[in-house]
Image 1: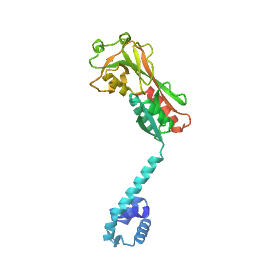
Image 2 (image 1 turned 90 degrees about the vertical axis):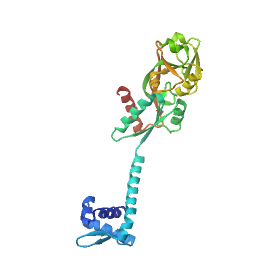
Image 3 (image 1 turned 180 degrees about the horizontal axis):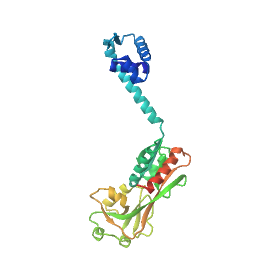
Length: 279
């Protein structure tokens, strides 16, 4: 019935069978037959036709909005079905890798055919669980990633700032050198160790810099932090001071389950590598 309703709606808009036929790319007899089939199926006459004019009947006027709604619903159904049929990559990532994740998504959308990437900010534990459960196609993880995952596209993030409470003595001594951290509690998100950095390390559960910043604000310790986060975090209860000479960096990589490799995933790996080399 979709074709019949399409012809009905188009004739109603043009008040011309020949005009409707031209719009639809059909012959005039085909349009007339389609309208006639719809009239028989509905049991009402939709048009009054004379040698000079075509007019909607009262029944045609009443039924036209319903026919338009049916066609709109059919178009929406086709559009949504097409969207659902397209492959979708679910990418989990730590907040500090947000700009990279966005560039990857743009590159995948620009492919032919395009591949949609849904972005899911997540801490390390949540990202690993999402990979294991198949809820994420891939994740950007701090290395070393769990051995059960395949990794590629490694990149480094320089850690060149220190988060401290506003009233901390180090605020007035910026830039801070590593030796000035001796005797301080140094927070280490994700269980990593800051190699060669003095102080008393305290592990912060998960790879969560936001939670670690809460501890800094509470006076629990100080936190080495990448400049990428310094630019994006706005807090009144934490001050970021330059950290020089520490030589600290975080290494991340794209990780995925070896059991869930698809062509779209391989394209994601390539897009990640391209995004790392270009801006």
